[in-house]
Amino acid sequence: MDDSSSNFSAQQARIARVKHICDQYPPVVNLTQNDVPRGTEYISPSTNLNPDFVFAQDPEFDPVARGPFLRNYGWVFTDKWAIEYAKNLKLTVDIDEDEDEDEEELVQLLGGETTVDCASITDDSVVMQHKGLRQAVSLAVQDDIISDIENRMGFRVFLGYPVSFDYDFMVVLCTNYNIAKRQWIIERVTRKDIDETIATLSEIMAEPGEESKEVMWWYAQENPIGWY
Image (cartoon, rainbow, N blue to C red; front, top):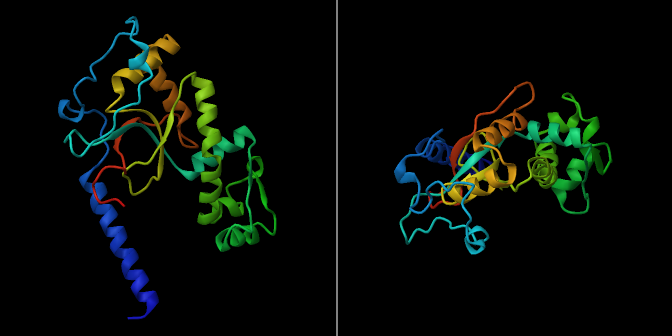
């Protein structure tokens, strides 16, 4: 077996393994009681909490403690959504052709240009048609997108990595380990019921051509499930 055949077989095995893991750990709309660690009960926004609790580092899944697997509550998104958001923000992306061979190839695809003006990207442009270039632009604008969402909403959101065959990234509102504290903070800051906030974010996260996107609980790739 030559190198190309070996690489293809390894890639197929990787794809099969990822699909199997995704089937074992699918996203859900609602959690069960066993999915939420103790101490995450609802806290009324009117409750005056100790600052040490509010600003303490959030707990994460600990295999030794045998708590429930870490799950992220939020919205997965595609490269197309990220680029559309970047277009609205009029962002630009610089590609360093001296970084590596992949970057050099992307610059060649752009006709020698090293800067992508997101506002000028169309569905039939090379950025949208070439997977590697589309992913590079999407990845480059994520931090700016997260910052813009935070400015619009008035509280922090986070970039997450869901167990999914179709999506690589998501915007995270909370986890099953910090849901109580996060809900308290968000309702306290916005002075709105959490459901109103979720509805607003579901509209923001809607893919192009859609009005809303469903928020779900996704297993995190960081769990010891053989993802890496």
